[in-house]
Image 1 (cartoon, helix red, strand yellow):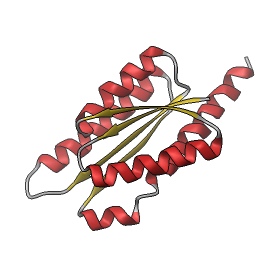
Image 2 (image 1 turned 90 degrees about the horizontal axis):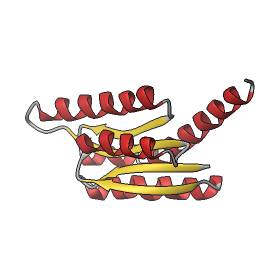
Image 3 (image 1 turned 45 degrees about the horizontal axis):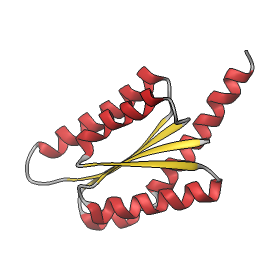
Image 4 (image 1 turned 45 degrees about the vertical axis):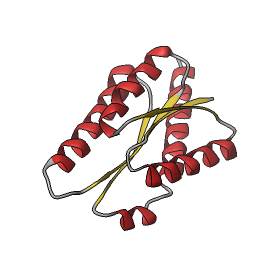
Amino acid sequence: MRLGIVASRFNEEITGQLLDRARTEARKLGVEVQVVQVPGALEIPIALQWLAQAGKCDALVAIGAVIRGDTYHFEVVANESARGVSEVSLECGLPVANAILTLNSEAEAKQRIDKGAEGVRVAVEMAKLKASLHEDR
C-alpha cells in the first residue's frame, strides 16, 4: 500500500511532530509513504489533488495546524482547508484523512499531537475498505 502525506510547514513545530508521528505509524503498518510539504493549510488541498491525479497512492493524509488568532483569518483557513480536503476525497474517489488541527493555542496541540498517526490509521483502514468493496465486483 502506498500512502501520500501532504504536510503544511506553517506552525512547523507542531506539524513536524504530527508528520513524525505519521511516518512512525506508517512504518509500523508497513506502508510506503510519499511526503509532500506545502507552505500552509490552504495549499494542502491542491497538493492532495495532484497526488490523487498522479494515481500512485491508495490513500492520502492531510497534516497541518491552524491556530486561532485575533482575526477572522482562522475561520477562513480552518473552514476552507477542511472543505478542500473533503472535495478532493469525493472528486477523486480516494480516501483522505484530515489531520489538520484547528487549535485555540499552541499548548492545545500537545494534547492532539497523535492525530498524525491517527490520520495514517484512518487512511489505511479506508483504503483497505475501498479495496475490499472493489474485490466483490
